[in-house]
Length: 124
Length: 112
Image (cartoon, rainbow over all chains, first blue to last red):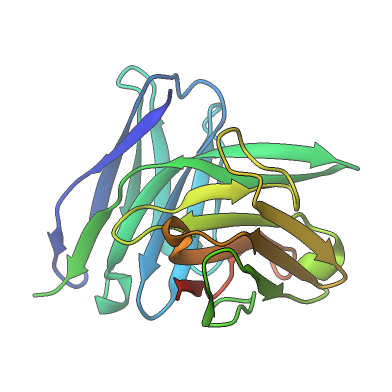
């Protein structure tokens, strides 16, 4: 049974870079998509982006200019970096496995399972 | 800002049926994109409840069912139980601009 666990600093200063790591156990990151999502009171649930096992990435257009997601195969981990953070980036950050279902030439991603989440506060 | 709209709250007595709507537009649900549903119990991470509009993952009780029509989707809970008190979110894909996975605004289900 695949399990995911987020780790990283809980407090980041404005204008700095938020960095989180997701450790995957019970399965390999060499298959599936691996996503980051966040949840804040003001904006609800938001998909940040994902990385495929090949290393290819896709990001939410609203965050694309500030975000990088990457894989660390030997450690079975994937990571998130959000640059130039502001208070609006304060949220609970989740990592999750993305599973695709395809039909009629279109593919749709669902997230299962999720990590327990980690609160990141942006404040000086 | 969420592009899928859900009612903020719904409630029902144990054993009753409740439904949660998820209203989108021509660039997401109305474009034929599949809808998934998640349950978030207090203090926990979201959990996949329904995928591809009407499929239940292994272990999800059959009192949960999903449907989709036009630009909207619905989650029904038939035979509401106390442990169903949680927040529920729909998710789909939006093909406007560069495209992205998008979530609903969320619905709090209260068991009376």
